[in-house]
Image (cartoon, rainbow, N blue to C red; front, side):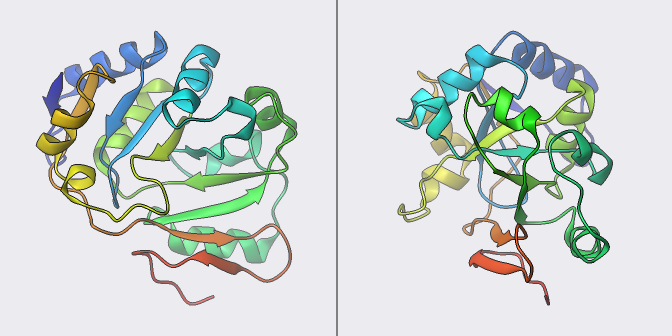
Amino acid sequence: MLVEINPENIDKRLVEQVVTYLKKGGILIFPTDTVYAMGCDLYNKKALNELATMKGLKLKKANFSIICTDLSDLSNYVKHIDRSVYKILNRALPGPFTFILPATMEITRLFDSNKKEVGIRIPANKIVEEIVRQLGNPIATTSLHDDEDEILDYFIDPYEIYQRYDDKVEFIIDGGLGKLEASTVIDLTSGAPEIIRQGIGEIEL
């Protein structure tokens, strides 16, 4: 099902339907401030396993990021960060960045793995912001495309996405055209920040 949500005039009832779907273990395709992504409720183990299967992975091998509403969400999922790291996060987010940070035991537990780090996203997109706010906890997320894929129409055009994924996912949100570039990935786990992948996000480090 393709559901149109206007980011400038969000229908809260539609968001409530999406949140109910996520809580029941559904996989969602949704817009961000970069490419379209797929994700699920971070606290639904069945959905996490299904999301990993859709990417051809076991859950413990999956490098999913989590989408939070703001920096106050981080303490459950990220170990204590120093002032310099916080300044970088505060300057860049919300925005088209994925920050790799040291993970807490909560992430280890949720992903059935010995993950030492986790990717954090706070996209500048009102639709996903409202979904995560109403859900009450982060979404586990991964881009529709894999890193080696060229980003084509079926990763950015909601109608093309619908044609390709309608038989795999029950809920696809049309929030307008996505971007042709992915997020910039920055590793903040040790000392100096390191850009792992240069995407659409530009920042002075």
